[in-house]
Length: 256
Ligand code: PLP
Image (cartoon, rainbow, N blue to C red; front, side, top):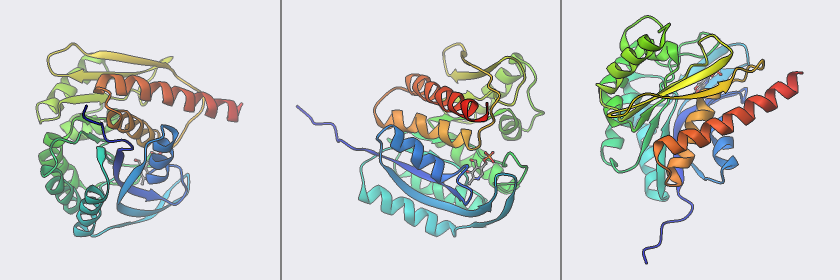
């Protein structure tokens, strides 16, 4: 009987955040929660508090590619999670490496800006991401502002507008899109999952009083963790959402 390789890693391609609120610190903590080891390619080193991005230094694109290639040579990689990519040069270098590893599922968290408003991917980077990375992604996880930027639209305000923009994104190549509803209003936070050939599927969670940083990083890493454990995309999202609900409930306990 063929043995499935054990301890497959998730390769995290993302930036660091000195406050620990977002970025690779969150990614690695999330993966270890699920017992999944991380391999790393750091794209940018940022100086941040919880209120602002003080400065950001992008890593040279060729060195990001070198980190990815070394990680892929060193460890069995079960899935790849892409977070902050900073520049068009890094986006292109990452895409070039990924074209050599098409069998590995890729979760793309299209990080454009921090909650505090600082730009984390340049305008040219957004264009390159649409051209080069969307076609290589198994799943893209935009929030409403990111979905608007990627589709050149205004932020969607209704289910119909979300669907129009998500379909426009799927037309650019990714097999699956999860639109995160955290930036919308209402008693529930509703994420919507789009996959070709099936109707949209909703994942609802109670809207919590607590705000939590790095939620996009955690959700995409939790999904990548479950893909590396061989779950299909929809099941990986279900597990990852349950994990996020626990994180929000714990944060709410801390503030009350
Ligand atoms: N800093 C880094 C390095 C990130 O990767 C991200 C999001 O992915 C952020 C900051 C933004 O996090 P937040 O919106 O919680 O500030």
